[in-house]
Image (cartoon, rainbow, N blue to C red):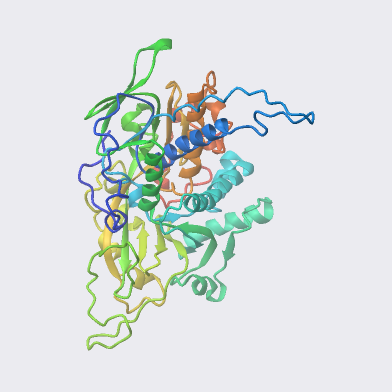
Length: 543
């Protein structure tokens, strides 16, 4: 299994943030040397790793504050009306915070999180029929509710911690332009709603295509129907930088450009002790290990080979000469505009007008395996990903491919003229690609993330395999695993297996790492590949 590429392409998020050195933790090393031993080692510094460290340290910080707070009336007993000045025993000092180490193979947040589309979009309906068939309608609703909460949990997090990451709460519009996809999706939606009594989220709104309504509402050419609901957009790299800044401030140790080559247990049997992490810079021993490497999980934990498959994707930024500069965007690239073009003036060559500003985010399904996702930035530029028509031409382009140092063949051509082709009001604009990049996702064999303690590896936890759908799942998964890690450090989880521990979390049961899931041989990720819709009859692991 491969390690992350040494010289990846950059992305718009990674190259245009204009962060000052004191807040840019891309190449940060908290200490010159690696610690010899830590309480918790986390491998990976994307959204999962940063959120994991944040919740571990934040939870311990809050526990210590509660333990050290004096009880009301301390030192004086006034319950009998008299005064009792008998001194109370002072509370012991709070224990020191746990030592938490984050190891990153490359620069911080240089993997999937730093290369995604900036879209926090839950699935309120698309896979509801599939989930209901295999897990039951109640669990299908729970899976939807879990993702829906993440939008508002991220909002709460960035507000509480004052993380400047361009978070915007918005509506998303899922647009269908092909009857082969629209028909089955709408049929399943109507059947579940009207015949089966399934309660979709009240926020979900169906927009039919009669009299061009879907096209008018969405602005997408040829729209047959659409669904809309609440979602969010953000600058993912800035979100993670904000979290890592809080982690380091709470005593966490971040070590970038430190490749973990292998993991093994110190000792054997009942006497086995800490986990030994072999890196290019030496060894680290950890009492607890958390793996948040997503696509690369199978490289470190062999039981995940074939359970989480690397999948290469592509995204780009599109802008016009009228796209305003957003504070912190940096200089970007020259979009090739002629001076004066974009303000509606005739410059003697052609009349170029500014496009309409898109107030929504989008997912667009042009065919059975033709799926794109799109957000509009506050400066008027667009970030769009997908290009499945180009990606899926050859399995070698994407499946088991971890080369994010070069583009997928045909991707640039696919996105050239994209907005002019698909959106009303963009015809005649000079919208063109300013940045284009690849990223490596981790596709789960049964499409569900892997969250919890690994069977037969006491003290090893994972949160990975998000199948290109991590932003509305990761935060809640990190909070769940962080709670298990804190329980283990306090000795509360002793004697419990992974299943017992997960029962006390909010992570949906299909996410849990179980022996049965690891032994399941079927892999449906290829047929699903972010736009191919897994058939309701497909045999996934049942609970």
